[in-house]
Image 1 (cartoon, one colour):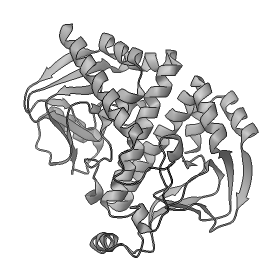
Image 2 (spheres, helix red, strand yellow):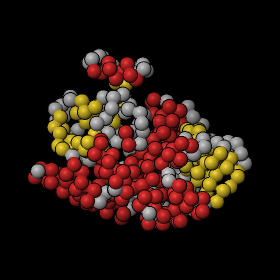
Image 3 (cartoon, one colour):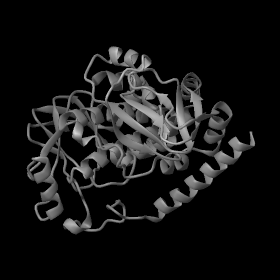
Length: 365
């Protein structure tokens, strides 16, 4: 994944990272990030290899049960292998979480260590840098999520079990002017029950926000050539598809083209009459290039949602349940499972207010 950082970051971005960070050589077996502990820096793998694994505390009976069902061992289960150009430790720059995974060098490696506080200040003060880095992280997380699903098997396709609702982060992270632009640029589209919004393996022409109704996302169990599968959909052939997510008001679909060059692997259709806000892909792409503030907020949202889906897979498997019940001391800087912080409740209120305002504006138009 070396090309991701080189493609997305500018020379000035790289120069700042080199000036702020420090290069370190680590031996095989060195643990960079330990599950259940805070992360103090962003790590960029310059050369070498890292393994990402998840484990469950031995004193948790639920964890033991999940491990037995999955055929795994409590000592740890590898879920991803990272190569040159990968980034780890990104979660603290998205949300305040204890690490749910352990990251360990599998051979002698060279890493760039960027202290957390310096990076947070840079992200707040430099919109251009923030847009570039958040997009880079989103692209890397999309790749890692796909790798995890392939590594753990299709039965772990649990993206229907996120830790957060997309509406919360979408409408609390974006500004009023961002939402106003979406309303002005997009158009309201009605779908009847059973109507397909887009097919797997085919290009997506817009970003869609579900305003009303319910939809489902499904994946094909056909392993054929994706080109053949895409044109089979056009011919109304009988392709077996498995539902993996239910979508409701505020959910976003069609974001894949902005972080992944491949066509989406899912089909989305209405299971009852629905209304979506359709924002043309080309207009959104142009906005992302011309408005760095908007781009920084948009890619931050995508990175948070991708990280949350990754966390959802880990938690659904019964691994990585890091809470104070497993012996961790409480830390007011961190978020624990099932904790409803004041900031979270504020996000709920803000997101709900903005979403209702969007609906009123669209209905008024």
